[in-house]
Length: 205
Image (tube, rainbow, N blue to C red; front, side, top):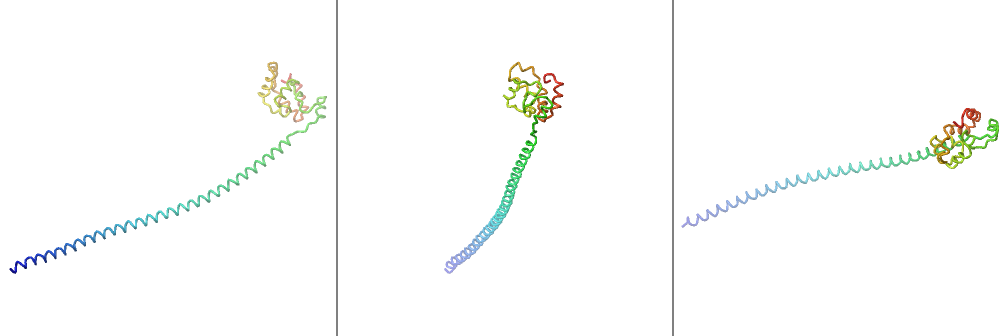
């Protein structure tokens, strides 16, 4: 009778003890899992902090590089402005020099000197002073805005031929090879040299 009571009681106690032990073991396993999870979370947090710091450092470097670029850009702009000003001054100086040179290159015409050599009155920029040019050919040059000895002296042979062709076939026979050089002598007031040369020419050739 007593065993009938004791055996269930002992079994109950043993089950209770086993249940307690199993519970502790289960809690310990859960605790270990939590510890592992916490450790992993801490590692992830540290990695996140490091990544954030790296991004912050990169941002600071980018800001510094941008500041340097802005400084270089401002310096480049200032240099450009300075160069443009220098170029403007150089152009103005060159234009002034060319104007002075052009003014200096205009030789004064002396009608008396020309008359003394040719024995007749010479009108300034009279293209007919050139051996081979008559009134009609002079008009052709005038039609092409070549109205001075200087302008004729700067004409190429091709330009002279083009002027002659504008007058028709009857002007094709003329040879304008020496005309610019003759005009240059007239423009420079080299009357004796011009007359001597013309004495050697045949119809301007």
